[in-house]
Length: 396
Figure 1: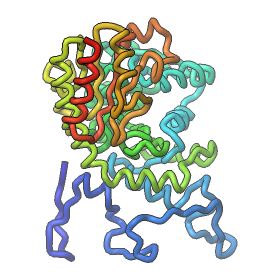
Figure 2 (figure 1 turned 90 degrees about the horizontal axis):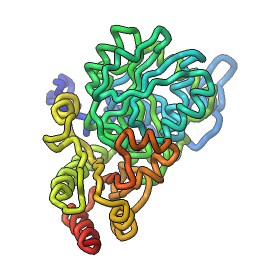
Figure 3 (figure 1 turned 60 degrees about the vertical axis):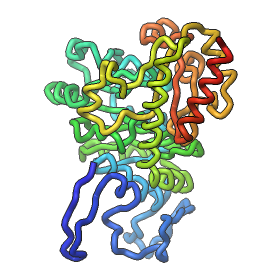
Figure 4 (figure 1 turned 120 degrees about the vertical axis):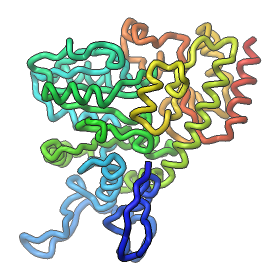
């Protein structure tokens, strides 16, 4: 997780670990600017004055770029080890922007167990725009069977939302390169703190910045990160043309959230492991799906390609009535959509995140009326287990 570099100027070893990169940009080290402000300023300006014709401060109009957003983009690009990142108004705006690089008639192989909003976008907007999709279990199926002459990309989440399927990023990247396809990875569930798909061969990484990057359930954001110059040029043209760039204040909120990304990810993942082990022992729980459990099919792949198992747990109970009862009785744990914040949230995918997914598709992916998804926060784990234990006891 950490590398070191010797600095002759400072005559010491300078850390360049990911937790440090959440806080500092190398290019600004040793430079006192913005009056020495430690918190990067919010440049709440729509437009910028020019010294004269043909000269610019580097910023012209905030739809094109804004200093606060640019600073955030450099941080996220650095965390994912890409050459550029585009910050958008939401995770869905980020996916929408990316899919503007495709043309009518293009074909995309997509993970079958995607976030419901992604499926809704693909089925109702992208297909309308002439893009074809094949939905595949990328953790198990032989992807090569689905490649056509017009296939342009493979799109995956790993782990998937909500069934926590784990795909081999490096293996799929090798296949993609052999067939001249883009590999797009939604890295929202693990964040760049635990996983860096670009280093494993992916071409594009997506994030709902609303989730772990922001980490406080107080703003929306999305990111597209790439390590390819040709894709970077297309994305920069598209973001200024379509106009969904992240606003200055929201950019500042995400920057503030990223400062604590490391300690939040470590604590929430530790809590998740404890809760997953506890859930396995409960009478009404029939299945616990957490990639940090050795029995998870993707456990060994996760150990190879990630630095942690994350804080997302999906579990199933024995009856629909018990599932609904849990949602009704929790108090400190909130029954709410979203994930990745400091507070623990519990979600009912059948009527929330995957409500627009046809029932037969949901059931085929394993999402039943007994499926619950838990986004574990940073509370004292004894309190979380205590509340779940009380709720479960009331239903026996």
